[in-house]
Length: 602
Figure 1 (tube, rainbow, N blue to C red):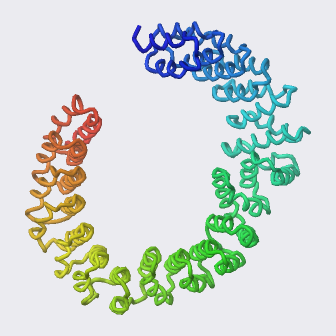
Figure 2: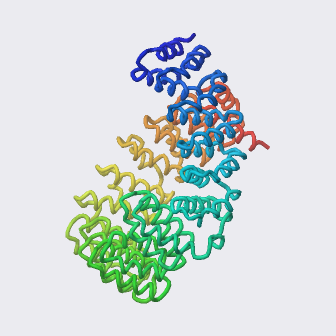
Figure 3: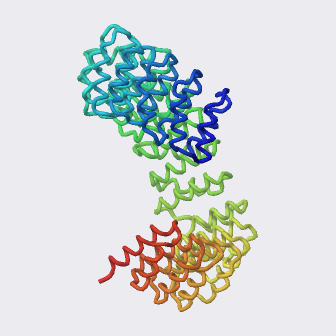
């Protein structure tokens, strides 16, 4: 017997199972030998319940199927935990006649109806649901509740009429469980059951009862029922749950509120207004779930909330106003551009950008000097969206109080018409200003000779953005001045060079890419491999074949993919060799690359 299996068998025979059980289970996972199976079988009826439980739970991992044949008899064990463990083992093994065995045990052990019914449902066999339905006639309410819960977890349309039959059975606990099962069935299969199938007046009574209940376990049923039936008071009933301490309840309630608000936005907004003072965080969460306010009354309610005393409500209200548009939305957003809370100002700027209101230009320009970076960024994006507004970049730059404001002014202007701003920014002592100049050139796809100093800046971020701008601007500028960047100390700059060379022109390009292919940084090598494949240089296949054999593993993987993209037939022998006996991590990649090359052959 292998040593691991022998040790597990020995541990099972120790006198103190509380000490040895976990170690035996670990060893059993390492070895499923026949000797260990016999040791397990010997302990299935051990006097100590813990040892029996360990032996039973280990059966599904055993190589000997004979132990599983003893599970039905173990279902008669006096210890409830042993019975449940045996039932779970039957499910894991998908043992023959497991449905019938569990159903019989369910009839004889009503005190274990819950776990046994769920085990029966987990089998997901065609007869399991019918066996569960048969048990709905049990006299014990606890058994019926357990079976209803199991049908709610896995039932199909076959159990629809049986579930509906319990909605008015006169037993509140059974009725509530049947309703929960129906709601869960509808969630899984909306076509299986319709609201019209419910007894007349029952939905209203059920909603009132669930909403008044102090039992938090029914929150899920209430939320799902409101999302399904969408009664008039659904928004007001869901709102308190949007701020529930339970994260799962909050998440489901917010999703349901969005569904309800989509078909009844006016009641949803009115409910939010009513809740805003007593529960501002819930009201803010509800505003997030309203997609847009189209109706005049709902838009008016939204605009009114932009003046609420709680900043979170103001922030979400102005966001909704920006999404909605309509009369008064731009003015409301503009009024919040000077709000004392930074998040509100940022959201107001974003809303003005969505609305594209040209009169908001001066206010947005003033936000470029805001103390909060997210406000400046939102104002910058809004100004770019309002194309009709002419930005006075020089004036912004002159009025700037610090480097962050000068940087925002540069990002807002067109570098082609910036005049002396770019030369001044290139020599600015603040690195954020120099970075803004490089980013502005990159975004505008323009290059100015005065910006050449940025390629040697001390900050690698500046060098990377300047390099990207230089490579994108014009092929006529040539690559020779960029040669020092091949040896840049920052891998990110070298990776930017490798990626940018894909679109660049120049006699140096191929040689540089082959050099970068074997860069110490894997990221640089992978970028060079992608660039070689996409540009299809004459010597690309040879360089990639060399990299596929000698480079670091991540670069080899990318080189193999690049060879597949190139489609050069000369790479097929190497690709097939790697697919047959190369590094296991590369075999499938090489096989796919070989298939691509073969498919590309004439």
